[in-house]
Length: 158
Image 1 (cartoon, rainbow, N blue to C red):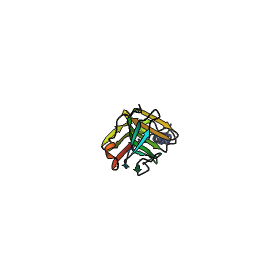
Image 2 (image 1 turned 90 degrees about the vertical axis):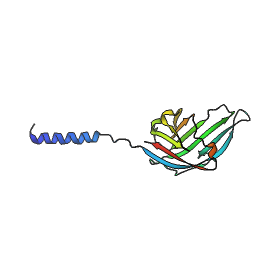
Image 3 (image 1 turned 60 degrees about the vertical axis):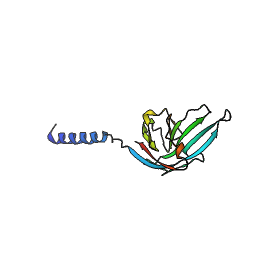
Image 4 (image 1 turned 90 degrees about the horizontal axis):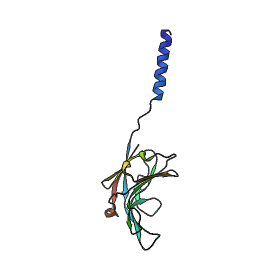
C-alpha cells in the first residue's frame, strides 16, 4: 500500500469509527407542581374505600404542571393510595404517557415529591401498556397532609 492509500484508509477508519460511537444518554430533571387533591373509591368487596391523594388525569383528582417532560412525554398520574379495608397495597404511582415503544423501567431514575424521593430500583412494579409506562412503589410521598396544597416534584429520567 502506498502513502496515499494509507491516508485514505486511515481517514475511512476514523470516519467509520466515529459513526459507530454512541452518544451518551443525558439525564433530564423535569420539575413540576403537583396540586394535591383527594378522591375516594369504593371497594368492590364491601363498604370500604381506597383513598387517592395527588393527580390522576383520568379522574377528578388534582393537577400537574407543566404537562410535558423534556422528551415530550406527559405525566398522567402522580399519586399515592391508602387502603382502608380494600385489601389492596398502599403506595405511590407514577404513570407517563407518550412512548412509541417500551422505554423500560430504567428510563426513570427517580421521582421526588413533597421531599420524598422514590427511585427506579426500589419500584415494586413496572408496566408498559399502550404507550403508558407505570412505576409503582409500596412507599408513599406523604401527600395526605398536603391535600388542597401544591408540592414540588422532580421527575428524573434518561
